[in-house]
Length: 254
Image 1 (cartoon, rainbow, N blue to C red):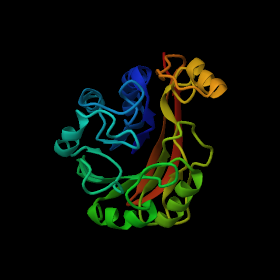
Image 2: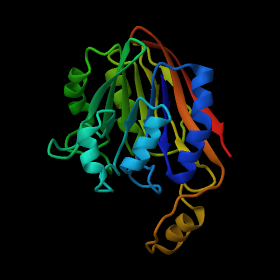
Image 3: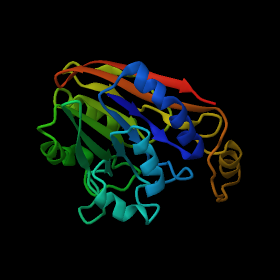
């Protein structure tokens, strides 16, 4: 399976359009999963961006802390089963936290979780995940997107799920980490896959604005950068449900 990290704004969508078709041909993944929670002008997602990501060949879309930024996505989350928001949000919030997609006679269970530290979550991810896994237990492969701020929550979840799922991939911080590996129980793991967006900014946003806010301590409207866009993700190979290899994908766009 190919998992692509947080798509950020117009630059992220553009580089996804440019590079995903070639990656599908080169790697021939059975499944493609894309985190799209920053696809709409760098914050949140609307049905327009979600439909575009699905048309480009994503089998499923995961989200994160900006899930509900745009009200028009709320009913879409109820209607479109291929898009998921963190499972450990409140049950009263729109959408679902798991899905099972099928391709080529195989099934992939996708679970989305939110970290609890510095982010809003209805329950701790390491507690909620047990119920989430029951919903995808019959899938041939299982991928968990852990959208979290701190590395400790992601690493702990990876160890907790080792041997239970095919892959645990971290998102949200937009900077790829150097710890991609297959854990002893056969679960592929990485703390953060990085973002699909402009590397010439500050985690995808215009660097001048981020610097100004940090220097003046005054609020400013952030805008996505267009400078030096990259696609970042991981390619995971598996035998049965056990992962055998995880490879980082870091490709520059135009």
